[in-house]
Image (spheres, rainbow over the protein chains, first blue to last red):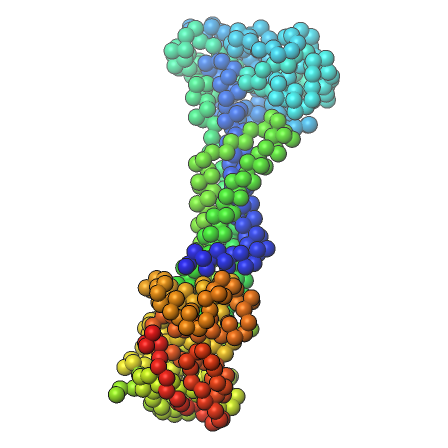
Length: 366
Length: 203
């Protein structure tokens, strides 16, 4: 009977119900998408860096795990020192340049030969390796997003580049240019942002790491097999705060709309509440009826929110193919829990208000 | 025979700012089991207030109301709610059916609130007695005034208790068919008991 009462009440005002459902849906979708976007970005970036195939990455002291945020580059001569170390098979310097024109991306300036030695080389889907100073390698995702093909000219960092190859994604960056050209462009002559090292055997990674720490104290040395686990929002300054703020905003939206929906429901049904009380319904019954209604509305909203999340992801990926949005069951459940909690809290005051209504006044309400 | 309903020196005062407005002034009356009572009087004489107080919806300012031996004036709000649930049924002047529920839902919810769940036998007896069998799946807005009234009566009868009618039609004495409620005539200035019929316990 309670179920019938709740369902019929929800159906009685379809527009209001729809607004409530959509508010919860937006709340759920915001949480799922914001977390999915950040974790997708981090995971995808980490996978690309792991995908280079190096064993160790050396960065300047106190460098960020998010490579585009790295500070001042290191002298390229450090590479010689690293190459002389026992168990080091190859060293590849790379200059990383953050670019926000025409999309947010990190460009890798690399020396083809050393990069090949460390990574095993690119997989060329079209074209050939860099030969000239203005050659540009583009991975397949970026090529799709930017509509680039071999032979095109692409302006980047206020410089015209010749697209000489489309490579398979997953080797660190989406765009690769010759190291000397990028050094000239950004005024970082003989500098590198990172050094990628390949050990003679993977099990020597720990030994090489220790040796680097001894020779270059203070520098950041990261074994790349652990990189994925390090790429979390808590390791990016301010990111977790941003996520928390966005989640709080989503909760506030859902909570306020539910509050307003249930408050107007209570006002509208004042007389009905009086009738229920005249029939002997106690406060607990009134509270349960309203909280159940709010919870039901929320459940529909959660279902709509999950659908909205997947639809939004599909739309985002269609428009921005290089984006990665990771929708996980864990965060769907968390978002559902957050929404349900918000709906219960949002409906609590109106439910309490309804339960406290004087039945005589309620019955006289017009 | 012990009265099923009794009032002793019943007062109900409403406060409007600094002014106290008396709605009931020392009302004394009693109703015996099996009696049906119509309260008659002009508008504003306190009929509704009396029914609210003896129905346990409003608290008396002074005096006592005894329903089946329970003094409502001594009971907490929760206890009065419980007593209302088990002993009292209301039929409102404007019927006050829940607009979102069908006729069946409006009647069944009384049983649900009563706490014994849906009792199909009792439900069938009541709805058949009131001639509602064919109208149960209609919402109040799809029912005529008379049908709505019968649904309201069915809602009051379907859970066990003492029937209390709150209808100006009954209070002013119009004759009803089908319902088994009293017919009476005449005016009267204050609440009073009148007539005698079987109550819902006979169901």
